[in-house]
Image (tube, rainbow, N blue to C red; front, side, top):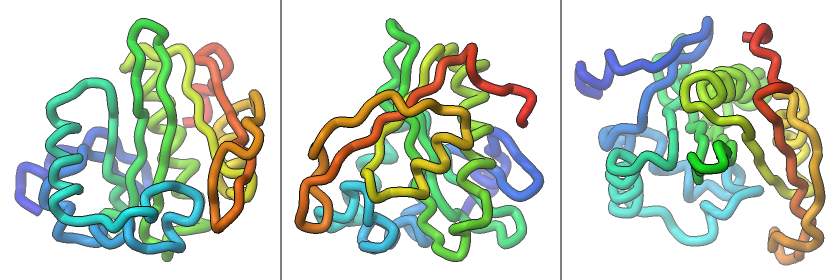
Length: 188
C-alpha cells in the first residue's frame, strides 16, 4: 500500500480503521474473498469467478460515481484489510441506501467487527451523506446478518418469499430497515 493510501483513513475506532477501496487492495486478500464459497455463502459474489480485471473495473467505477460509499475495513492490530462495508444504490431524491458488509477474513468472524463497522457507516450515512433511511436484505439462513441488522437498530420490515436461490433451493429474503429518527447516535 502506498503512503497516500496509508493516510486516507476516513474514520477509526479502537480496533478498526476505514478508507476507500484502492486498486492496490487487489494484490492483498481482497481478491480471494469473492471466490471463497464460505465467505460468499449468503451473497451472489461467489456465483461467477472473480478476476483481477473485474475487481479493478469495480474499484475504478466506485471512484467515478457518487451512488455508492464503499470502505475497506482495516484491522488496526494487524494493519490488514479484513472486509468491506457499503452504502450502495444511494438515492438522493429519496435519501435512501442499501447497507452491505462482507467480512472476508474468517479470523475476524464473531468478534463484533461487523457491528462496530456498521455503527460507523450508519452514522456517516445519516449525518454526513444526508440519508433518512437505510435498508438491507438477507437470506433466511443468514442468521449472522439478521442479528447484525437488529443490533444496528434495524426493524424487520418484510419477507420476499422464495426470492433468493441459495445452495440449490429458493429461500426467503428477509428485509430490514432503519430511519434516521430511530438510529441511536449515542451508541458510537
